[in-house]
Length: 390
Ligand SMILES: [Zn+2]
Image (cartoon, rainbow, N blue to C red; front, top):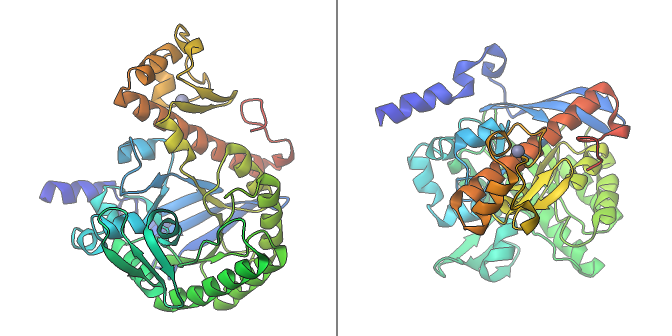
């Protein structure tokens, strides 16, 4: 136990770095350091260190980024990951995580963590959901146990987990849905946003984000954003997109929402996405992203490279001595051939998932670093990554 504690302390960036991050401040900090068109390069300051934006957050669903050690995740360059409230509240339970020192210590991740509200996964995974004004009643997909997730409960769970960034509970409006249904759902989410904000306990370096909804209706999106700004959050998310509406519509909704959000606060496009989605949304002023795509793809033999996506199961890789991506700095590209990675995937070896996940997260981290550099240099309009437009 002593060893674990001293090791954790050694890893904590706020114990190891200079005075800037140690200055107590309420909420999280956000500083914009460069702009290019609508795009911004910035820096978030949290209780667990600084984060350069635009940023992609690897998804750590069950207190782990699947197939990765925390050191491996940090080696990709990630300093902010996402944890899933729905999964953690059911197993191992938020109180247990809190008793064990919080999520950072529990999973040995010394950097920043954003937790979602649990709403999206209640809608997509749980059984027998019943949505009412109070919250969502559901049965666990694990053991059928009954739960009620309210805005207050969601915020309390995220507090127990110790999230640096907490998300307000919202209802994820199904797509497609009638305008009336989308409007009613958005209005419910705004009432929940207000209750979430009220339930949030302010601590230095910790913040809460509201989530704009409104489906594919620009006017509802704007009304939702305006309501959130009225309530007042530390950052603003755009939710309920990339669920089948198509990239053009996703971008149109981002364009409708961003002008209604404050300039000086971070903007987060939830659950997005493909490399081309990230580039397009950064150009439209989004600062933060998360998606299971790089990690899930890593477990299904899909690799993102500067030449496009590759399927390592394909027999054309069987005799190829070349690395996945010659410009990539990850352990998979540094030491292994496409032929070896093909062999691992064919043989169902665990190392295939580990190497391909490390590669995909490195690709995403390097894509975001390249976007940040392009914004700083004012050359985002002609942005390419490895000579191609993602
Ligand atoms: Zn690589």
